Image 1: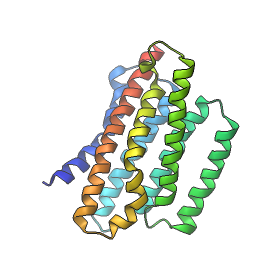
Image 2: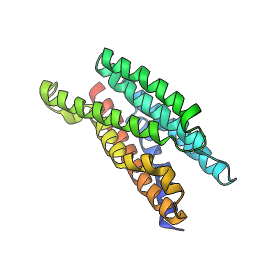
Image 3: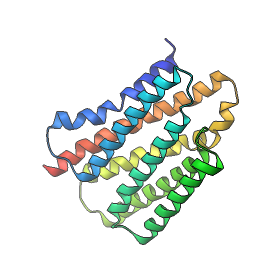
Length: 212
């Protein structure tokens, strides 16, 4: 079996890490982290469905576009609540909905990766994540900031979206290159996805710790 297929399998399976974490801890977690768990569960379902349909040579880009859209808005919603529904974040949220909708149906369409909206969404989440880190340094809400669940979600966002920014932006260009090049590029994406899910698991774990 090629290493790229092993990485793909590990990427899909890594979603089980944050999903199993609440079962291991056997306790109540914060509502914010419930959003993360739902997000990972949706990711697992979409990945399994994409693999199944891909074997039948069915275009799976609509599924990928739908998931990446859901991921952006669910992660954005975490910060929206944290910053107490800031008016600026509300405006960005509405503008993002409009842009994602137009890009999905009218600009790039559902049958190719929506690179424009995913790249823009990544920049927005990176910007908000950096602002969150700045606010932590400025306010110092707790002595042990590593116990803040949202901090680990922030790390996951920065790692994943910074690493995949050019993959999303130039995916349709890579798609026109050799199959080997395309596979290697998305193998790198899968490695980042594994790292993201591990950090999500840490966030869920710390959420339980904070609750108890």
